[in-house]
Amino acid sequence: MSLTVFPSIHIDRGKVVHLVEDQVVPETGETDPLAVALKFQAQGASWVHLVAVSERLHDTDLATVVRIVGSLRIGVQALFCSVTDDDTLRRALRTGCARLNLGSAALSDPDWCARVVAEHGDRLGVSALVRTTPQGPASPPTEEPATSATCGRSSTGWPARAVRGAWSRTSAGKAC
Figure 1: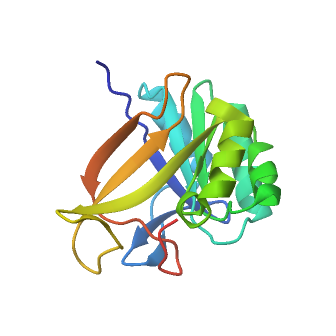
Figure 2 (figure 1 turned 60 degrees about the vertical axis):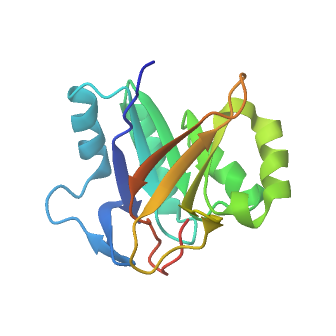
């Protein structure tokens, strides 16, 4: 069994950001996502995971992903929190990323999610933040840590991996 670590870069309007207590906070060090991605590549990463945190699909973030995809020799997986319909999905796929993860749209519109995953196959994955309790899945906590599960479709089915951590939210306080 092998484990692939995907270093993550959060972006908002073309700049590196951090999410702190439901707020988008600008990075104080390196603000260029391409420079950060190139450092991860130089350190041996085989993939990078880009997260565009805005609830709107900004052309600046699309262009940033295109620039990173065109500059790296490693895989780029992207998650645009704003991909919730066919139009935004088409625009995000045009970035050339090797894989595009769907966020909360997979939970809020499972029929759409099933249709587009069937249409695009392994090019799409699903990332959903899930908190489990003895009674089953629960809504996002206010202070407790959660389990973040990333599920991706492959030719062998729907593998999943889970990592203990905190909820990731957009600037409006919603998990994407």
